[in-house]
Image 1: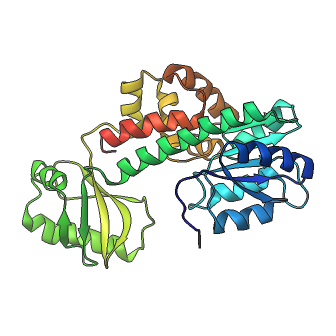
Image 2: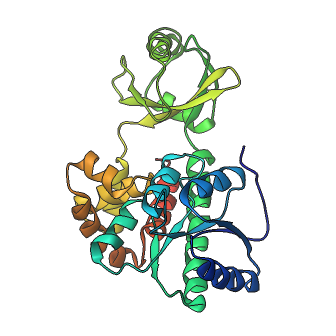
Image 3: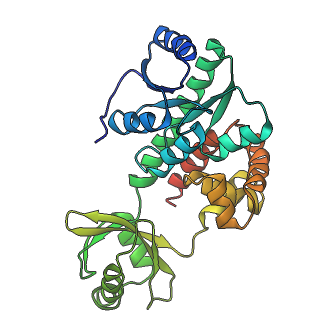
Length: 304
């Protein structure tokens, strides 16, 4: 079970070099941060799951499990995936840098580490992580078209926004109690994963529902307006991006790695990175976390 904390930032430093650990530990403690130390990847994963850090400094080359694999495993854990990972490496080859970013890292520092640069970059990524977390919370909870239904698909509760959208779609009580309930009950028997979407039939106005998970014995859903712009289309319109750039940014905001996005959009991870290189200056940011924060705020405002 992960221990929650508040107040002082917690930093997990993963490095097999005692000299490097000592230098970094002293710099971080002088900056008022709490420091956790791991000597290799498996130990880092264990510590992170027990005491969730705010940021991780990861050596790229370590025995047993290197930093790249450790980062990939962190990003595969939904409870740890949004922790920013900054790679520390003596490797300067572009392929190694790209490999670290594709593994889920947000930045990299070349050894020997300069404490002032380390602290400056860490503060940027800590602030970006908080911005993204705040925007994600807004996206998940504020003013959305949410509803709960029982296992038989019958409406139990709905936000005012949901009831307004149902009224606009002329979804009356007969449709809700019969056609909609039947479709939802069949869907629940298939055990949809969180995030799955079902297109609802029987209305002239296009409506879908997104599965948000169980809620006190019922099922929490989000009602989606089929007449509204999709997430990528909205980002394209609001941020003056190309179609491909908006699609890449949309999936970045949904926590996908370059490799994941490449598979979704049928392009190479390197091409994804090239699109991001065009997105960052258009948004006035320097990294994917800050870009995701902007996209999440717009998506939250649009209830997407």
